[in-house]
Amino acid sequence: MAWRLKLVPEKTNWDFFQWQALTFGISVFAVVASIVLTLVMGLNFGIDFKGGTTIRTESSQPINLGAYRSALEGLKMGDVSITEVFDPSFGPDKHVSMVRIQEQAGQQALAPEDVQHVQTALQAVAPDVKFAAVETVGPKVSGELIRSAVLSVLAAMTAICIYVWLRFEWQFSIGAVASLVHDVVVTIGIFALFQIKFDLTTIAALLTILGYSINDTVVVFDRLRENLMKFKTMPLREVMNLSVNETLSRTLMTSLTTLIALGALLIFGGDVIRSFVFAIFIGILLGTYSSIYVAKNVVLYLGVKRDWSKPGADKGGPKGTRFATGP
View 1 (spheres, one colour):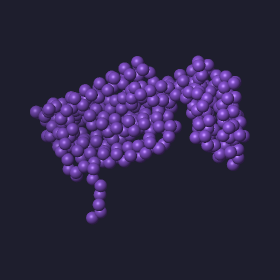
View 2 (cartoon, rainbow, N blue to C red):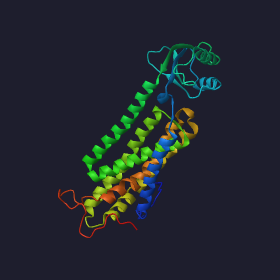
View 3 (cartoon, rainbow, N blue to C red):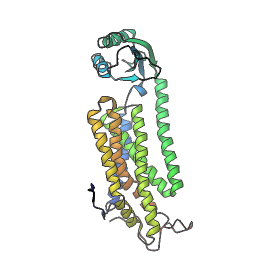
View 4 (cartoon, helix red, strand yellow):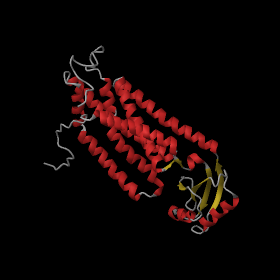
């Protein structure tokens, strides 16, 4: 028989809702605290949201991003982002990069002497580098990016809410959205607390978190719906515990393998992707937690229909069944 790794026994009977009031209270507190932190401390916005100057460089030599960053660190210009541009139309001797530098001392545009200092620093590591274009991103564009970022997250959450509502019931939809709000808001709160750079890549990470979290939630919801139709006289709390226990091995295996890969990127990936990876790392931890202790708790408090074959079935289940009674 082939050897298989088992993180948990094949059959478990852990009571995940033993402290349901406490765990749900902690989640509510974390969301409120994150909102307060974000409003009081603010986010450490990156160049995408603060505005600054974008410089397009061209060189016949291959671009060494590490050398470019080291050369510009000595200029003390604050947040500097460097990315290489790839295009099939570029010839073998054309190497392009985009250098973005935050606003300096309240000046919307980078002063000509500062542009010259940047070019001199880069020419020290790439003598033939030249500036093809120098553009300024003002606060208006940055404000539009912030609005677009917020709308993208809200649109994703709305679409997920509609999907869960159509696939399951409205109680499940509310539970799923509560879980997603918890994951996104707490992640943003952590960024505000530690003043980690918040830019467009972080928004991409938040959207990734939404997808991961709802996937984990839907897996358990599917099993819960099956068990609700199978065990029609079992109290809702016990059916939920059964469903979580039956999917526990899958949840842990998926989360741990993903966290291992993200941990390697977090340690060895470098500063460029660190905030992006950190956001996803925290989001997966929160998503695994919230899929049980937020989404399922909300459904437990609301109660659900016990037999989908009967449209008018009592959503409270058989007479005498308990739903939201904790230990």
